[in-house]
Amino acid sequence: MCIAPRRNFFCPYSSFLEIKLLFLHNFLISVGVKEKITYIYDRLLSVWNYCAQGVWSDSRTTFKVNLIKTLNITVKSFFNTDIQTQACAMTHRTLLAIVPALALIFAIGRGFGFQNLLQEELFKILPTQKQAISHALGFVDSYLDQASEGVFVGVGIVFLLWTLISLLGSVEDSFNLIWGVKQGRSIWRKLSDYTAMMLILPVLMICGGGLSIFVNNTILSFFDFPFLSPLMSVFFEVASYLFTCLFFAAVYILIPSTKVKIYNALISGAFAGTAFLVLQWLFVSGQLYVSKYNAIYGSFSFLPLLLLWLQLVWVICLTGCLICYASQNIFQFSFSDQISDISDRYKDKVYIGIVAIIVDHFIQSKPPVTLEDIIIKYNIPSRLAAMATDKLCEIDVVSKVVIDAKHELFGYQPAVSPDKLTIGYILAKIDNDGSSDFIPNLDENFGDISSELDSLINGFIHNASNIPIKELKIRQL
Image (cartoon, rainbow, N blue to C red; front, side, top):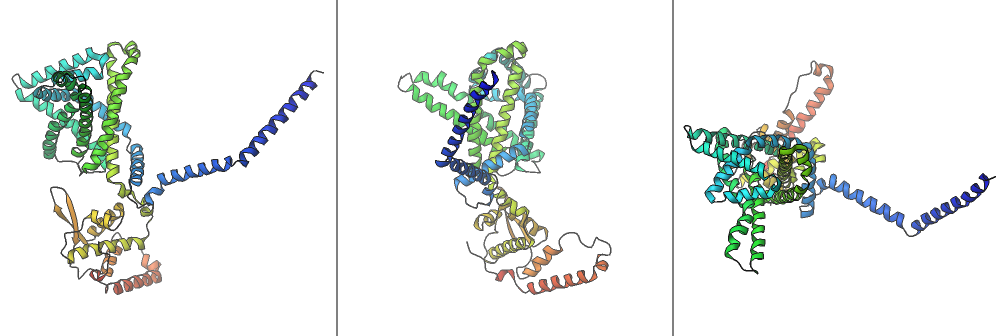
């Protein structure tokens, strides 16, 4: 007797709720919310498809397009090159070289009178680990004493340089992997280039890290004016930030075994410098929570924090290198899907067109055309242009010449007389390049097919041999 009334009580409520939901649904449709949600979804999907794939078919060179391409390459390369694993490896190598590296920095700091400032900067970064830092600086002082005194005076210096050169060699290998450089520096270039780096980079690091402390402790004492002190502090804080960005930019220019443009290095340096300073701020702010580490690790709490900090610093540094590579090579990835699936006929057009450009420059006594000229002036994707010039050099149609050895600038000129270069000559070279006649009894099994096909192709190439490349008109730029 009690159940039925409850059913009668809840049923009207359920019906009323269904009516409300139906009314709400009809109201949303009437005001166009459903269409708006659908429009927003379609719009977001369109933007995502453009950023992921469609941007590579966009030949515009606006800032927005280049930014999307740079971010696209950076994100893909971040996962494809396994930055986290490389950062772990660099963290391990840094631990082995940290005492020699600090010794070099403090040796230069002594020459500039910044030794105390560098110590204060370390205490500022790790305020709760002053005891551990003091022990580490004790090792550094002993290292410098051993390197400058004793029976074997030069042994310590040689070992210090060898340790740092090994670290820089590992950094170069990681950078070259990102840039796709297969051959690094020779041993003699490593000795000369790395020595220059070890003189330049620590100076920028010292200026970036110790300038603000130097201002607070020294310069502001001479300008004890209430209205001037804040301005001076802001000015030198900005200068310290700029030196930090210049340090990373110098790393991206000097270490990779390839030519890096200054503009792209400065962009990457600004990113890495900003991220490094943000990480430093977070690390200093997070010192309030290291009591948990102290409770677990005791006197060894400095070690996991140091490992975490080094790991994140190397992630930032390698990501900045990725941005530098991506921003400088965005044109290599334009039309990447189409290039991977390019037809033979369209490829032949590109090859013959590039030969026509090279021959035209040669006949008019212009400097040898560079790969950059072909890419920029004729809107040919750099990946396709590089593939075509490599192929043409391989089949001895064009040759690569040195324009400026110091700046590693190369150009292209005809490998044979321009009078000999015809469409038929080039197509025959391309058609005959590669392996052939390796299937047993192919001509006997397909006799009519082989003979007819050879006759047609040879006849076409014979007729095309009467069309000189030098007489073909191309757009003059």
